[in-house]
Image (tube, rainbow, N blue to C red; front, side, top):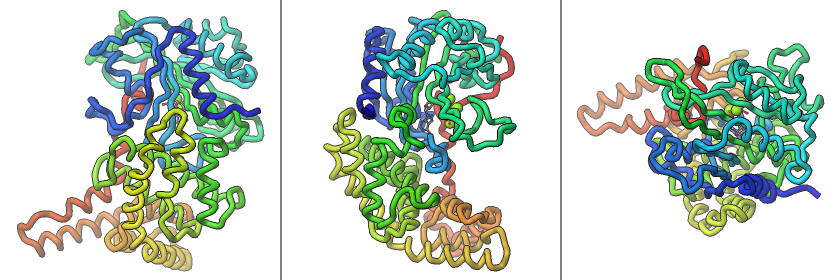
Length: 472
Ligand code: ATP
Ligand code: MG
Ligand code: MG
Ligand code: MG
């Protein structure tokens, strides 16, 4: 009997509750009091108020399953087994209470005890910061063999100023058959960029204050913050080749099959489309449910971009009519045990999605048709780049953001002349300026549409892995 995602989420929370933690509900994806953050992107992002002392928690031990959005992973979605735009981060937090020894001992108990996750200890690998001899000692004490403990220089959380410290990451060896790299590839180890060793958990030992003068001063009250990707752990429990063949995503994929007449697992490229659609459907459903709306800037632009991307991938599956909004209730069903509010709001969310989708659909078919022609011509001419003027035409006439065109082209083995695109954009602005004299600027909207990378600059608390030199 395979455990369901709901059971696995609950098991994590129950475990830490049994260790004196209080369960914090999943907070809104829209940060309430943090102007530096576009989306809540980790469990700890919602706990800042406790760690900076502005709020004192009832109990200094907390646990949560926190919905999180990371736009910086958008290009990985569907291509790696493990990345999503929206995912849930399971976590346990100690606010100046327990520290390394308990965090490590409990992590190992949860993962390997037959009563809890019952994972095969032989498949787990642990990384430690080289100078963190304490962490190594505690991992050895729970029984991790020396050759499963790997020193990695990058294992240090640092957000510039403020709390920082070494971390341990836990990797699950999915086995030789998942190896996508050559044996001598330097990335072929737990912690490297590969598909064999799956990173499931990051445990941060927050023990220093990184001061403005660059020095590291030991914190009087040391903290623990951890993050475990629910979808990744579920993929292990359900013996799935990627996160997508789990009960969290399969109903979405099957529903999409009915819209497209195509079958999942028939063709690699099609599968990417199925995965991207399932991923984005979840993200937009939750984001809109939390009060964000499609627009041309900030958060709203992320939603708009996700919707347009999903619709374009729908085209690749031959779906010509609006469909994305029909996935909203499916997301609601899948998530209802922990997020009943999504199902309750499904009609509202679906309406927002449908109206955005149908607006884009009006120009999409013509745009994709043109893009396919451009790609064919570029290839026929033995060229490797789509011209800036063509990319600009797609943008200007059909609403295709540059990066969508780039991704689409990339799938066909082509690049886009970005400088050429920018030059066209400049020229159009000049023409518009000349034509309208001093009237209100319409160019602003175009700027925002092209600056598609903006949201990923808002990497938040746990996302900033700033270079650091020595642990002092
Ligand atoms: P990766 O190296 O796989 O991109 P990460 O090191 O960026 O992950 P952390 O910032 O350490 O991730 O986040 C803690 C945990 O949250 C990870 O160990 C992973 O289980 C999960 N996680 C992080 N990013 C994603 C994502 N985009 N999709 C799904 N799960 C994620
Ligand atoms: Mg990452
Ligand atoms: Mg990582
Ligand atoms: Mg990590």
